[in-house]
Length: 264
Image 1 (cartoon, rainbow, N blue to C red):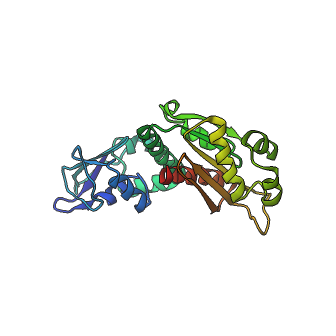
Image 2: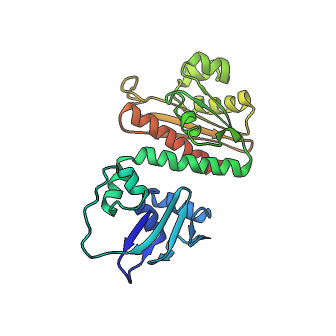
Image 3: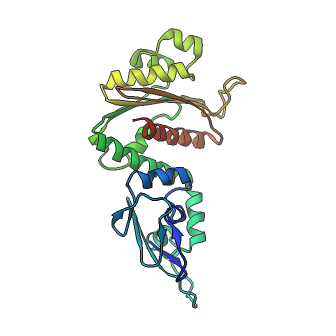
């Protein structure tokens, strides 16, 4: 990908990564840089506000961006209709690149965080297993969409019914009756039961109400609980998500990937 700037002007590293569609979240970009995942001119760069200029190159994962001098002269109209290919080869103007990134925001972020989960768990030598209710196996699908998942991912269980949560994940009947399937207590017992069932080092779990029905005043549609655990800690997070059923499911998976990165 080529990124054009006027001769004599500069751009910060985080600005370039954001414009290139790596992420719209500054905090996420900062973490990528500070974790040593970004290279400038093939050298690891840890400063988010590193100044870039014409001739510099930036590499992150599948992204390779070259900064070139902006051509202020006449340019023939691009003939290609395939925007993905134009992004890949650097011929898409910056404003169109941002529009394309925005249109695929959730899917793009899922791919981004999935790559980071792969890198982190492989680097730590940890195994992972998942238990899913409202997402119906979507998190496992995202994890296994990238090659190499078999090196750390043991498997996933779609625990949609209370009976499965109880029998296979050992969520207590009293917990389900008192707090309900969508609760902090159930998510906690789900993730603990997942580690036990799969004998994994780490585990993740999600339970929620994706809609369009099933919500209540106390627990409206979009109420989701996610949990992660390893042999040192357990973390449960309560989410209030907006959108269609599909959007809530995707956002739940995205937040689960983020929690895995933050805590494992």
